[in-house]
Image 1 (cartoon, each protein chain N blue to C red):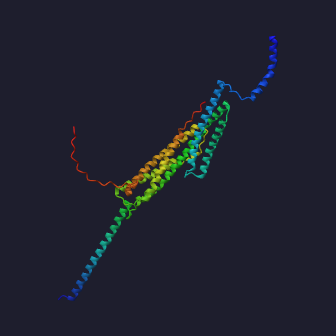
Image 2: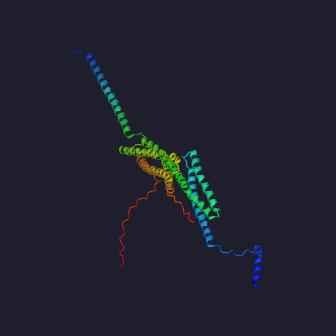
Image 3: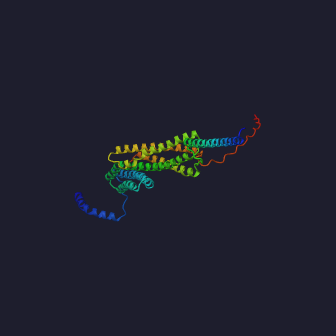
Amino acid sequence: MPDMHAMAEAMQHDHKTLEQVVLGSLVAVFILLAVLLFVANRNQRHVYGTIPTPTPISAADVNGMLPALRTALSEADANLTGLDNALNDQQGSLSE
Amino acid sequence: MIRRRFLALATLLPLAFPAGLLAAAALPSPTPAPPSVASINVFTHLNNLKINGAAEMDRRRGNLQDALDKINVSSTLSSDLKTKVTKRLKTELDTLVALETKLGGETDLPTGRKDVQQLINEYPTYSLLLVQARVIVATDREEVTGNQLVIMTALMQSKVNAATLKKDEVGAATIAINDLKAKVKDYKAKTGTIIPTVLALSFTNYTTAYQAMLVDRNNLYAARADFKAANTDITQLIVLVNELKLATPSPTPIPSVTPKPSATPVPVKK
């Protein structure tokens, strides 16, 4: 006659082992998922140069700098015209 | 008898002449005799020289003064350089003022002609000084523009780094940023040596000096083309990064109105 007590102990032992295996597998899957997510996120940053929060060009940036650039450009243009005028300067009439 | 009277008159005439002069001096002066044709010509010629000479000197002084004013308000030139250039311009201005005063006071046509010849001889110096000052001013103003571009490039780079862009936008933004940086580098290469070179230029040979400054002028125009391309890059970058419109805020859009059904056309009376 089988030792009922021994059988019960063996079954309990098997049950514990199964629990450990399932738990271990779940932990392994979570770790794997975490690693995959980290790598994917890092690759995405590398490709797109992204930072989670975009920082748009503010109106102050644009309003302050672009007009200054354009004013400087138009003044540079005016002075290039002044240079051309100087290069094309002709002496006035000095006749009697 | 007649001969005796003639001799008496001939003897008294030299004595009477000074007395007549004294009497004439005491009386109101008569209308002067019309000047001869030759003296009219001399006066007209000298006057024309004075008028034309003064106009030319005013013109030159105006041009030099404009250039001097622009040198004085430049923001990128060192004070030493400003002093050096303004000293040259002021010396030429003083020369012109002295010559104008001298010519204005001349009463003699040959001397007036000499003054005008001196003015003509002074032209190459004036012309080269003017071009030199204008090259320096134009370089200064391009430097101001370039400095603005450097600031904008740094801003654009930081915005591209920080922004969330789609894959195709990243490519376009990278191209625009790289082009912008290349234009800034190119403008610096084109204009970086202009001022020291133009300052060291000798005016001994007019044509050589003029040609050298013509090269500077072409480099300044090439830098201007860089600025234009850079401006296009910046415009594109702003759109890519933020889809932000560059112009002033657009006016409130006109609400679309559902078109009314067209009315039945009124028959034209014949």
